[in-house]
Image (cartoon, rainbow, N blue to C red; front, side, top):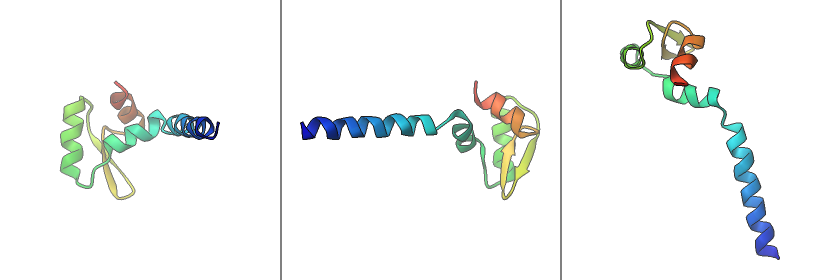
Length: 73
C-alpha cells in the first residue's frame, strides 16, 4: 500500500509540474540570447523581422508578441 501511495505522489507531482511549464515560459527559454548577433540569427532562422532587448537579454522579432507567435509554430 505504501508503494502505491508513493507512486501516486510522484505522478501527481509530475502532473502539476507539467501544468506550470506553460507555453510562455518555454518560448522564452528558446528565445533569449546574450549577444545581439545571436538574436539576429534566430530572427532570420524563425522568419520574423528585427530584434529587441529585454533587460540584459536580446530577443528576436520586433516585440514579445511577435516572438511568441513565431516560437509557437
